[in-house]
Image 1: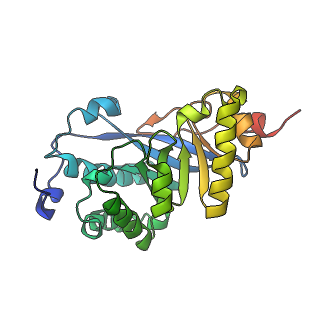
Image 2 (image 1 turned 60 degrees about the horizontal axis):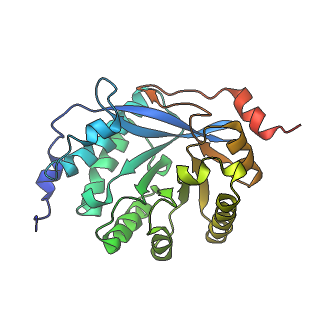
Length: 254
């Protein structure tokens, strides 16, 4: 079995340059951008999948830390003044209290409030230690960070995770969103998730929204936070805006 990393290993820089793209998350109730999600890219805009192919077990921890730091520094440099969603790899966090110190230090350096940072854990990622994940999420909350369960509905552990720890947000998986306006099964699932989330006081965000019909159905179902190509594609080292008329087309029905 591979030994866990030491704190010194976590401090080593990732041995390749990273860049970031940012995709807006829209609050249709206010008509404003609610947050941006930071997405790792290569220095010339290479995809996240391409970047991840360069990550080894030995550099996993450095990669996770570099993504956090790079996301914060890039977003502030670009003038981001909303919330910031950052993906994290739960299997890469060795000691949450200590590993968070780097994030907190960088947030202080760039004057970014921790309460405006939302850490997303991907439900479909194979979680090796659910007790460790619970410890990580609790540590994040204790430091003022918000947490989100990404791709909810894509994996098999979503309800188990909710039973152990309730995040601040659920991000509905793109598979549930695709053609939801004409799929009664998906509609029933989303209605059930909305009831569950409301009873647990958890926000719901629909990601992967690509069409007006999808957005209109989700809005009518009570979801007001959305993200997807319908509103804006990720901007490489930029903060894309969302056209006001797109939001009006969703919320203003004839």
